[in-house]
Picture (spheres, helix red, strand yellow):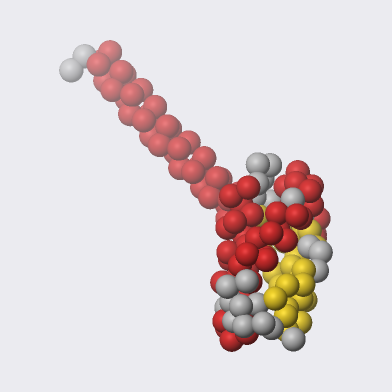
Length: 138
């Protein structure tokens, strides 16, 4: 083999190894960035406390409920504050079909439903978590 062919093959091999290493570094950097947990300061900064909503359940019981809604950005927090009427509407519709027992057993499902339905209407960011912070059942 000529010296020129050896140099070209070596150069190509070095470029391939370098590209693979760069790809792995970039891939690991993105995984760390996405998997990084929010600090409590971020959670507080991007959270919205919903107004209390009082409504009746399917069996005639009444419930008063309030949520802490965690968003992924300041813009999303501002948007959800403007959409509190939609949050109330979602809650009224979801709670109207529950009985007292369904409500007691299905609070986690209600939080997930609220999160999903709010994310459907959000345009600036998304809802990452919904926590029940106040609940009174009568």
